[in-house]
Image 1 (cartoon, rainbow, N blue to C red):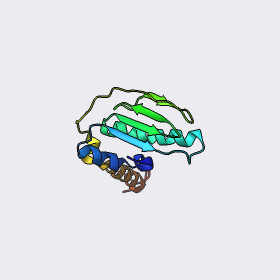
Image 2: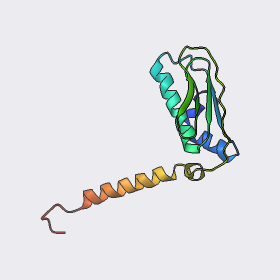
Image 3: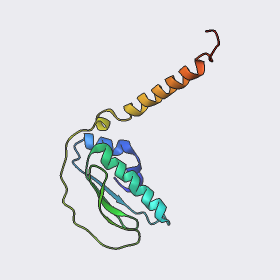
Image 4: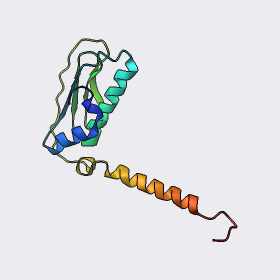
Length: 131
């Protein structure tokens, strides 16, 4: 994934369905001037690792470079405006997660459930009212 492509879950999902055994995100985050923006981008990238249960390596020239394990733990990182490198041993994985197989299905099911619950509460007669 290049730059902000890591924000789009479906891109990482498709890469894993096509056989990716780990994920890489290379980015130029120099246009983000604040720590919070760079940290937010890293957080979104961590989600891609968790959703697909893959190691994710993030290489950034100005921002936060990191190695993220399949559980979303940041194992190593190099902070904003710091130079350096690290070496990380990773395990390749070809397991498929529920999310990878079904995409946003679970989110849609929860949305339908929430809508149904809201309608049930809204249409229910008030206490003491005749149905």
